[in-house]
Length: 373
Image (cartoon, helix red, strand yellow):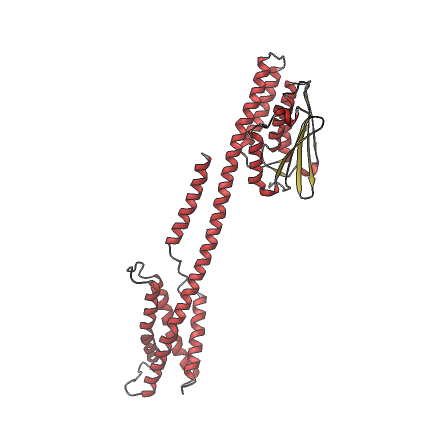
């Protein structure tokens, strides 16, 4: 089930990337300021160069190059959007460049028509005809290259945007995959803990203990508070210690002469983040594998303190110890170690050590982060 959920997330990400690669870059605005700025600069520079060999005022020459420049801009933007479908053998960029080459002579004629009182008189005015030819030649020489440069910059911008979008999408998919795995591991721990607790109560009832009803009542009250938190992705140390105390109260009622416990925690760290059931898993493990097998029972000490930028929490029992308990201390510790890695990465650690003369100390260390309200 877990592998199918994670595979489904990665498949969704692959489909999103595939769809993005099939799509086209979204064209920028037809008359966006960056394009208008390029047209103004190119027209002004071209007009100045033509004015150097002309007897006309500079404003007249620049006005004509402006007409050509903006005509090329409009044609470039129009064929960027239309037609929406092109034959397979015709690239859109090639259509845009050819359209510019075609429109430059027409735009140059329009420029002369507007600036000569609608009478260019090319047939009788050789200087105007020469100026028209120079303007047309300059437009055909520079406008397509400017268009190609704009296309290259547009493709580069689109590629960068796509790379950024893919990186964000991949990060989001990885986060969702980790979250799904975290929840699945947590779902494994929940029934494990509940079944062990109910088994302890069953043993008490079968033994005919006079306090069985009180223990069951305490257990029901505890489960009403604990079960809703089993599906939360994060909790605080204060909430975790509250559950630990409730659990140990139930266990103490089951074996009042064989279990003692003590909880010590700095008040300043109670608001720190803590993965749900972190300390509870360690305490339940200590009861089941340390105190229960011991003929004389033992004590459990829970401590939590802040050290530098890390939160250190430990559960120490005086039970039978690692050797007597054997190597299989339950699936709870394996799941807890993996949940800590998913929540905090390499900054989280889980360590087990022997306690003299007998017993086990389980310690977890993870970054000290304040829980979000």
